[in-house]
Image 1: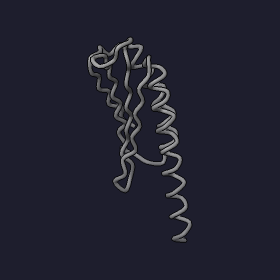
Image 2: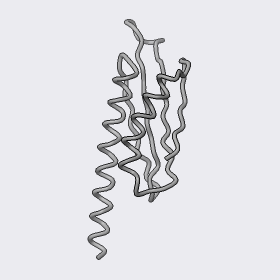
Image 3: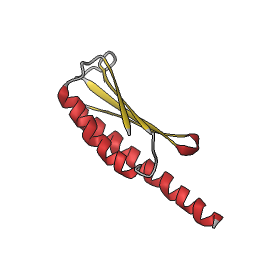
Image 4: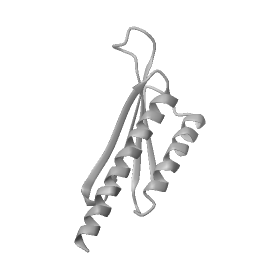
Length: 109
């Protein structure tokens, strides 16, 4: 699985790359049946409209076969928690997608 990282209003560091790669490994294991997938991760620091502190946004999306786009967005006080929440939500979506597809395959047989 290829990983594309995009950042807005922040500088990407080795720590952030490592954090994203660790999260991507879990997603890659779930999607190991499919080849040529691209996981897009966008990290953003939004501060203009918040009165107290920085808010960090993490967005993860992957396009799976049959043209379906699985996407997850999370906003939290730090990158680690926003990235973790986005990852958990995306994993839930992937499991539902895989369950639905396996059910369709069983029906065809």
